[in-house]
Image (cartoon, rainbow, N blue to C red; front, side, top):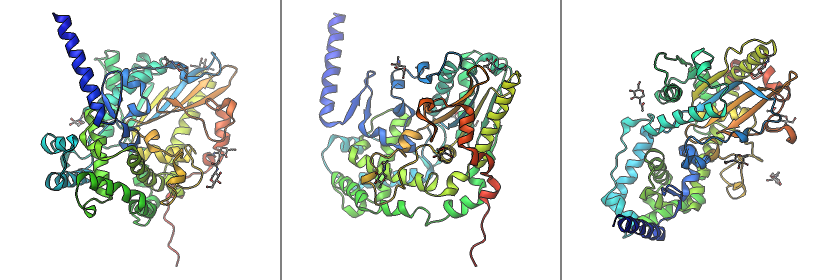
Length: 463
Ligand SMILES: *[C@@H]1O[C@H](CO)[C@@H](O)[C@H](O)[C@H]1NC(C)=O
Ligand SMILES: *[C@@H]1O[C@H](CO)[C@@H](O)[C@H](O)[C@H]1NC(C)=O
Ligand SMILES: *[C@@H]1O[C@H](CO)[C@@H](O)[C@H](O)[C@H]1NC(C)=O
Ligand SMILES: *[C@@H]1O[C@H](CO)[C@@H](O)[C@H](O)[C@H]1NC(C)=O
Ligand SMILES: *[C@@H]1O[C@H](CO)[C@@H](O)[C@H](O)[C@H]1NC(C)=O
């Protein structure tokens, strides 16, 4: 009897799932959660799971062989992790845009598609302005899980002994979402080791984790300069974006002039946030096919490129202070290790923003494109390496790991989002784990210069 009932349920689920495919464009994963096909284009609003899909099945899965140690002798002795905060609510500015689109759909959209009916009859506008970018529960978990995975990937460094001994340091930006992420990372470790008799400090340091606010030249020339992002504005008013807004207007059956680029972005965010925060494939996702999503992704990549990336030199130079902080720490650890001392800062966890990571990645030369990305080269940049969907999901992290490989040979490994990345300009055979000395040589100009005060000085305007 029970077996028959069970079979019935299975048959029912199978039928409803395959029926679903008729009008829903989705990827089925083993746990049967359907993920919108456009989820891989969510740029800085993307889930960490989209860049590491194996985590969907097992959020604590770790594969130590990805480290590809050049020899079994290599032992890590220092790790610096620069981590973006976890999944968060939209900012009040984006909530306002989302409300505007929602109101338009409720008052003017017509059509019989099931997704549209679902929006109009079941979906509720639950985003409020007071959510203002706060960390959500999923964001707490992002960091707890990351902490546990990193302790499995580097068990000799992220260990109970090192934590209790004060060899693991925590630093964070003052923003609540970063402080909460830091607390969550620590909680991941203390819960893992059932530590209840001790608490661990963190340092709030905006000079390092929000350097962009403290760099006058960046603030004046980029952040507060309306013309700095002219390429973004041009693209948002260009033919590719117009195709997207017209398709949205068509599917909602509203006049073309009621859907602008902000409205399109709001719809894209609604789909992204519903997935990131609630793990649902929302009916809003039906406003976009993959071609549209690629245009939306490009618009945001363009913004990141010109505001935080290679677009202007000062974007990356504003991170000189963090660059030196990191390399000074590597040097201290290397010196201590070489002289046979205990490494005092075995692990440093620094929690900040996408805006913290991207200028630093740019300064280090990662994901450098062949030429600029502009408002007019969408078509030729489809294979670009500068892709924030891959680089900067929630909880994105850059790890720099120092190894002693015996006979005094130190190596430095870089991992982005738990995957090895090669330092630009270093020969292939030792790419994923080059000699520390070679990395320093490659960055010698930056190590000797890249002075934050000098770079960030405001130049006198020409007379
Ligand atoms: C672990 O990573 C290695 C190297 O990338 C790969 O060959 C192997 O299949 C992975 N193992 C699992 C279980 O995913
Ligand atoms: C974040 O921290 C604040 C202040 O400690 C707290 O009020 C809030 O509930 C926390 N949010 C989450 C999601 O942990
Ligand atoms: C440097 O660190 C490694 C890994 O912890 C260790 O095996 C090695 O003995 C250290 N070097 C010295 C000189 O102490
Ligand atoms: C870089 O771009 C130029 C012009 O857009 C093109 O001719 C060249 O082949 C590209 N190089 C690579 C390595 O993609
Ligand atoms: C690293 O070295 C390569 C080749 O020498 C060079 O092209 C590249 O610009 C260097 N990177 C940095 C950030 O200095």
